[in-house]
Image (cartoon, rainbow, N blue to C red):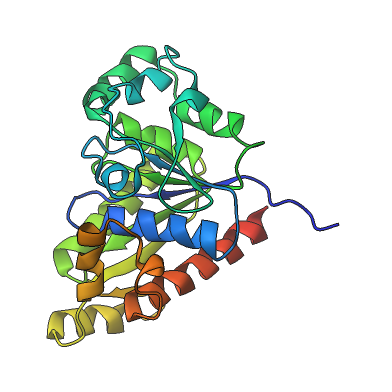
Length: 250
């Protein structure tokens, strides 16, 4: 009998917005559910709720996403099926805008980690779409995730932000999950992008393409309508690499 995969949580995180974070979260969650056939949950922690809007089956705004953390609502009550087969969702809403304040008040550094652990019997992979910035929420994520995927635009400023995250982890001390930087929105026609790719040839890269923009129009992951497109293929390859690393650490 094949061994069941141990629960692993993969956070998609960036210091700044506008780097394709939600695109990464949606497409990695799709790959987990559709390619690896993992029982997958996408947990949207970003109050902008872009991932939730793309794949939610629930049209009501519940304003209850924060209540999971204050124990006012049991976590499973907010899990809903998504529009992707095999992929469940904990949707974000505007209540998450005050989540940092709640975490400071609660002073429980591993609240998110314990909630994730409680879902281990139901899921194999949990993808976290995180809000940008170094905040109380990101601190919770760093304590909870088994791997952190960081989309990086091929530019000096974006690479500097990646360096800031690395310095933050070092200054924070203690252990931290492995980090996987990934170039996002790559346009090889641009000299700056080509130079960045040459500078970090081992980093995975997701190309810029009109198919990615179509995600918002179709409200679907790339794999469900443009599976052979270069970005869809790149995300599939990225997920394979993530799975390999997660299983090696299990």
